[in-house]
Length: 580
Image (cartoon, rainbow, N blue to C red):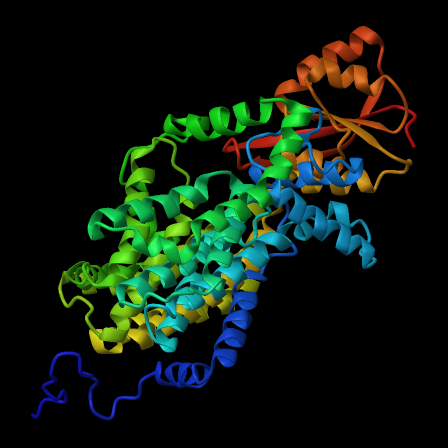
């Protein structure tokens, strides 16, 4: 029987004759959207909304960092003080003010547009993260245009859009998605200056757009998360200076004027907070937060290599293709484009692996460099044909494992198998199977597009259906709902044993975090008061109530799971007798 495969030259297609390729329609769609920049940007904007909106509005606050940021912002809006940062009465000086200002602007805009109780809706505080995530996708496209064709730039942006880690950060009201936007903007502008110099172009009057973007992005990154953005840019510059024995290209970024502009943007708030709090902010932010990460901060100390291990999940569906691209990228490491991207990626990655404190989102600003390198390898058709090709099975394995975990988790927590998620799960499995089945080095793009579609359906299943249905994971939301249904005006609460930030955000800034006896004293001080007492604090509550003659009854009991502490919780809502 004749072989159905023509013997290909290197890089040529190896498709069987007369075989219908399920990825061909997706490839034709990319043909269309890459016909112009307007189409490409519109397509990526639509993809960002489709990927990041499922669950955006109906997943409750996720402890602990998200409600800490949201509550501090809420207190800014309540007090009108946009300089100081506080969580209840405690100062919160771990991060600068940038993200709080953005969240406050979102809350005030929503209120001005007539959204009722905008300050209590967590999704309003997530809007800057959504903007940051979509903006980072679009800026990955813009940055990639300096290295690859428009088609390759769209592929790089899709790799970021489908990334599991970015999908998580887009739905959390914290700093990391917006920090990513500033980093990609800065690195994209710096890349254009570097590649211009590498090509031998040395204009007498370099454009102002590159330095304007670069220095403004640095200022924004500093106001959002302190000097971390300087680490990414600084290590890249130092590495390139070592490799090229020159930093002449930095002249194109107009460093004198740019540094002055950056200081104009960042200094006013730093001066204001120093005037307000002295050196307390700098001691807490630099000493208490940043430098403490060199050790095992908050029990997050883990050995080197963790980020490389997590990469297979956090950068899915791009991770298998990135692994297959790695040998070709290394061979091209002295090419100017690859050299710049590796200088962006490798030194910072080594630093994060060396630092003891490890959280998955720390390496997120390095993922655009990986996405662009991977897209470049796909364009050149120089992906590995070695054992690394076996990694293509990961395109099917992740939807299969995630679907199994989601259904089992739903049954364990709610006794319901999340039937509404099953059609999306089935679609994710089918497209993941297509991606695996189609893969060889000449059809990598089609496999990647199928994997991205699998990631989209998985996002609908997990974020849009399963997570919002897991109400036991969000006891604060259930408590807040119970308090909204009471028959009295302006209920006040004290919590004993359950002190998660989400509870303060959802039940009010005045919520007292105390122990069992303190909750009994609080309940004895007036009407329309409620004591939220976790099981382990009930004994001390009952003893104190008996000592002071407090008569009370159980209004409700919330059963749930504290994801921050990894244990089940049972919270009784007590009220004094006679409360209406």
